[in-house]
Image (cartoon, rainbow, N blue to C red; front, side):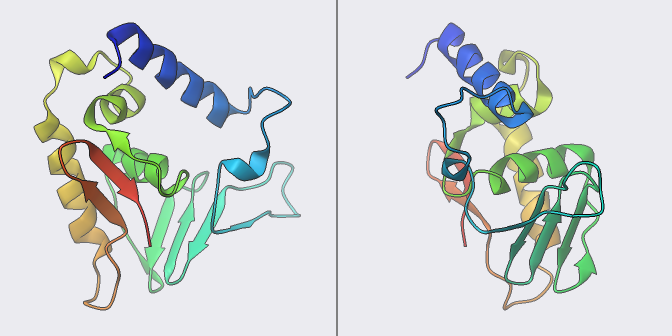
Length: 146
């Protein structure tokens, strides 16, 4: 288990890493898997991820499944964004609370994360053949996985 200061340091590292404040020796390819597309028309590239019938765009705050736009709340989108941008990585309840709420997680319970994840899963499951993208890691947290 990490101490409170270690959790905050880890959360800050993840925020810096996502903001592009990276050490030069960390390869970009270690961050992401899946297909990423760069928009050549824009001044800045979009963060787009396509996994089968799932499409995600960070800057447009857009998620579609089987070409259906999925309407997510701010917290649901932020949680999904965190998970999908780091596939396979397990995030504990505390780290999700720290990164998404950006507040001391002692004020919230695991139930807050559970409720948002439950709603997110329900919204993304638009058809029986759609995979469960958000997986539970019993007693620890959640991860994005195909």
